[in-house]
Length: 147
Image (cartoon, rainbow, N blue to C red):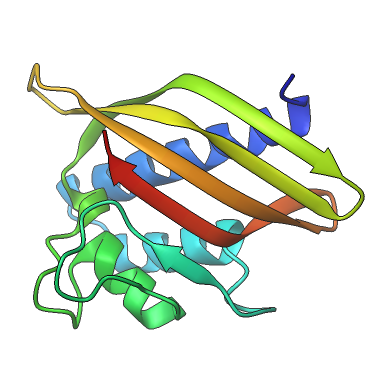
């Protein structure tokens, strides 16, 4: 059973990815939006983070905030196309499982990513190791891959 707090965090994460794309399409400061998203959802500002994004081939891991930002909004890493700039119309959970033990929280499942004005859906499996940070969570380990 997935707790309400984990579900709230995952909903915040998916809504944050969608929001970055909306700000981009609307001509807003999508980079600042993405920086705020990373600060709110990832532990880069407080601890080391391991991040294996969904669509990477040349630079497999993005273990610092600048490289993670590049992945989401097309930055300094050449292969990055701006994952969050797609933009996504919806991101839906297909299945979510979790383990909560003392200070260890793991969420694993799958998302369906649907781009705006397209019928194609991309199924992505993910694993998040979450740190408790005040009243919420932050991602310490993120691994995702297309299914």
